[in-house]
Image (cartoon, rainbow, N blue to C red; front, side, top):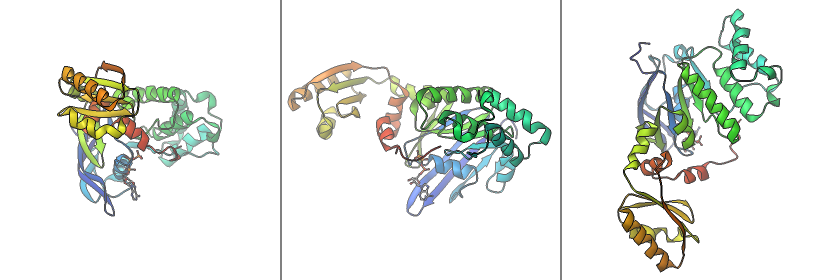
Length: 328
Ligand SMILES: Nc1ncnc2c1ncn2[C@@H]1O[C@H](COP(=O)(O)OP(=O)(O)OP(=O)(O)O)[C@@H](O)[C@H]1O
């Protein structure tokens, strides 16, 4: 692959499941060395996109190439240079950490004399060397995730697909895994990452594509996304009671400004003249007989940019995330 060639090139990709357009004519390019984030709520088509790119699902329309190899014909060549970390681990419970990596090394055809040194180096890099002889089943979720990523790197790929790497991990485990992912990128690996965590995308990604109901609604850097909302006024109000049932009434009073509910008592308002918004909201509060507990102007975050381009709040995304999906 020449330097100029994108690591991933996708043009007009479509996947249908019956009537459902799971992936709806998406196009994007990932540059070599980038961490590229696919950010979207549940069911927005992130996993389906990865499955098409790694050869596990056939697109209905469109084209894609990985590292210069056109799919589907070039998938086997591309696989030599790419690693895939599925959202549910593909490692063996009964094997030790080291044996899992050695097994993967064999599968990928790593030369015999290199298998053990590479496996041990990965265990060291991922902080798992001391636990190398423990069975996979005895590992914590965070360690399982880390080892699953290590296994996908055994053949030294140039491109790594990571599907929801930190879903189901506690804050500390998620943080250490993000540090590992950053470190891999620093070494030049191109990473395609799906996530529904805004914070994760903000911390890790060079660019982010926001996916809503199968469509890409925006592609930008985290900073670029934040700039979208930086020039706008942003005001947040917390009411003393539930105002969700009055959302329509509130909307009709706000005119061009847009309200997003953070929870049933808390709203964030985008755009419009702040002084006028304060007047409108205080009048609204008097009319409905529900007082205001707090009001503040705030600094826009990626969350706000997301709400603006996706028309969805992250809380809606989180609520859509079903807890019992059994990810490993
Ligand atoms: N094998 C399948 N058969 C039928 N429908 C499917 C299949 N796989 C995915 N879908 C549907 O396609 C849509 C996109 O699903 P996908 O798993 O790609 O979303 P996602 O963004 O990865 O969501 P999540 O965050 O839950 O992983 C959803 O509506 C889903 O129900």
